[in-house]
Amino acid sequence: MQINVEVIETERLILNRPTEKDIKKISAILNNEIYAKNTINIPFPYTENDAKFWLDVVKEGWQKKNKFIFTIRLKENNTLIGAVGLTINSIFNKAELGYWLDEKYWNKGFATEAVKAIIQFGFTTLNLKRIFSTHFDFNNSSGKVMQKAGMKKEGILYCHTYKNGAYQNHILYAIINEHIE
Image (cartoon, rainbow, N blue to C red):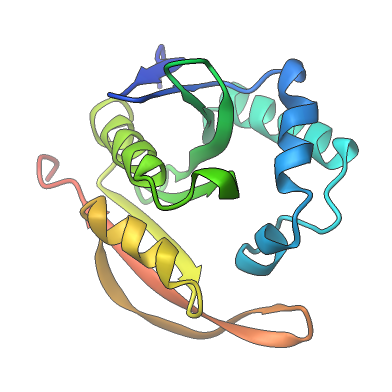
């Protein structure tokens, strides 16, 4: 697999690879309990060491070509406001989509714009057949992002994970690349 895309541009955003310079900003954004509440693997508190670990995961994913994670930046001033990525399952030609966005930028369409761009990347650059994602059943905003990006609800995964002392239901969304047989 040959991957040459390191930067994706949309109308208002630049998606690119995170660097060591982003560690302070990432840890500042994610050191907020809302992210731990709404995601599977973002801890709280979130430290610079957590951001360094995440950056190592990102680097390894790009090297192995099995995880393509981009930061989300505002095109107007290059401010880092989130991240979006795909974790590839090459055996089944599919990927799991994940994203987070700085709470200050919620409800402005940035997450949807980034998710649409990463789906396009997955279909055109990676030639994936299927991209899927889940969200906790209480996080309806994430479901709206997936719907606006063209993903369809496929069902509920009951007691799919155990977090914070409780079993969590997940809502499953997916989109299929109709151009691949």
